[in-house]
Each structure stands twice: as C-alpha cells, then as structure tokens.
Length: 237
Image 1: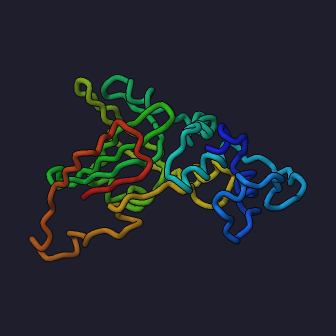
Image 2 (image 1 turned 120 degrees about the vertical axis):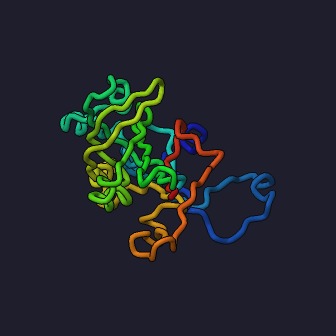
Image 3 (image 1 turned 180 degrees about the vertical axis):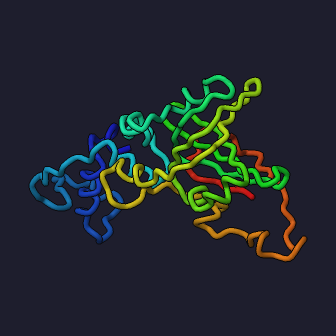
C-alpha cells in the first residue's frame, strides 16, 4: 500500500515508522505549526530494496496472501527442469494420461462418505488442480500429505465431462524448494486453517480406538469454493 501512495517500499516504510517518537502529539499541532520538522533528522539510510520473492514472502507472513506474482512463478524454471507441468497444462491432458504437477496446498478434505479417500486442492500461477489420494497412498505418505506446504504430484488424469481430477500415485514434499522463494532459511509462511491436522492436532485415529468408538461425519462448508484463491489451508475429516 505504501509504494503506490507514498513511493515507499516495505523497508523504507518500516524504517520511517521506527523513527517516530513514542510520545503522543496534539491532534492538530501539525496543522497549526508553521515550521514543519521531521520526527528525527537523519540522512537517507539507502536501504537495499527487497527482492520480488522476499516481498511475496513478507506478504504471506503478514496477511496470508499477496497481490504480487504467485510464489510458484519464481520456481517455474526449477520445476520445469524436474519435468513438472503447470496445473493448467496438467489438467488439460486427455483422460488416463500420466502427468506431474506442483502447487501450494490449499485444501485437504477427507469426508466420511469417501471410504478413506482424501481430496487435496493445490494451486500454482495458472490455476488449481484437484487431487485424489487413495487410502493406500495416504497410509504410505501420511506425513507428507498432512504437513507439506507445497506438493509435487505424480499421477494420472481422470476426466469425467468437465470434472477433472489427478489420481496421485506418488507425492513429493517441495516445502524446501518453496522456502527458497525469498532466499531465506525458514519455511515459507503458508498459513494453516483451524482444521489442519498436522499443525492444529488431529482427532483420534480410528485405528487406535475400539470398534464404533468414533463416528465419522461429513462436513459441509457452504462458503468453500475450490476455484478461488485460498492460501490458508482448510482441512476437514
């Protein structure tokens, strides 16, 4: 917001804010004063501007989204070298074709009526792809399914009319690659919703409970639109 209005980038704006005095000022003192003086007189610090990737990381850290380039747009060359297609290209392939796509994890759902099947929505700079995770793959790669902020997915296209899914055969945790967007060592600050099983704690595992001790129910969220940008992961069981 500061850049178009005040011609300040993030670091210059933060520097200026840190230079403000702590004591309160009278409400109209600035309007009545004839001689305007800055809070602190100091030379221009000449701060190094943030890289575009770092700006995106800071946007996600503070508000959970960005109006700049999508995080995966900074990783596209690396992904292409790994033979990773965009979500738009992957979901446009014919039924039964093998593909490899990648994206930020937006939504995880495991409805009770799906007989253990998990559905994951991922997003890149071209759009979203809806994944089908069979129970056997879920058990084999449970940690990656529940914890990864970014997934690289090997799978097969399943097309039924206008509905397209990618049935996953192998999942790869690309969170470390995502962390390189801002040239930082910390993990990419992708927010997790209140239903995230890994970060918020999951409900008791049915395998550890006596028979019929846990009743799985479907959860319907009327405002959940899978075709919109949802950087906050929302997971439901």
